[in-house]
Image 1: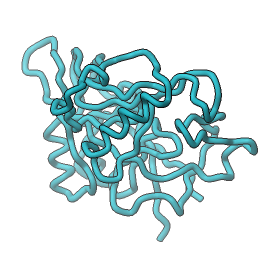
Image 2: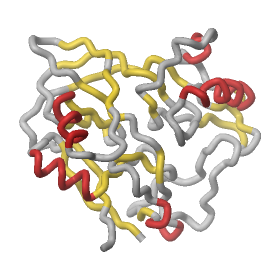
Image 3: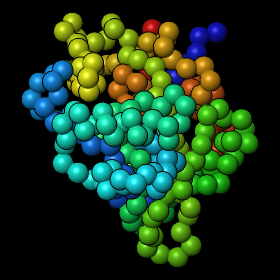
Length: 240
């Protein structure tokens, strides 16, 4: 049987008023004037490892919010990070590390998205999904200051990078810089997932070819619906 995959999105009809804002504790700097792709800046915080703890590093200030750095500095810091990342983690310029620190207000559903690239869960929702044997689901506490009484405990799933977009949906001149990972094209519309590259061991992940895309397996979607966990909807995406 063919596997089906879905992209989660905020359910605008859900009766929740939650909002949050913040930054992550640490970042790998964006790249400035990469020798592989030329002048310009490349970096994205769509790759996030919120469970990673850098407090043991002696040069923590190098991982605070900084202006874009030359590629040599990015590579130096990348090598320091590798032993601290989850197995199979992908390094990207501008990526975020550690918990999100910020403010929150309003009411939150079991699942919550305030941006297409961010997914959060109440602790009880994540634990129920883990009890249902959803694969590869690890939650990381967020450091949020809430307005109001009885705030929920929100967790951010640590989503690893898997899968690529299918070549058929990419422009003919599509290129990816081998030094910093910058692409010379925008997200195709419509886009198609490459079936041969999709994971079989996790139920929620980010696309390697476009890390702002969060993808869920049919197994994850069916479990969320069966448990009645609302706050997001799911749209099936094409796979070839």
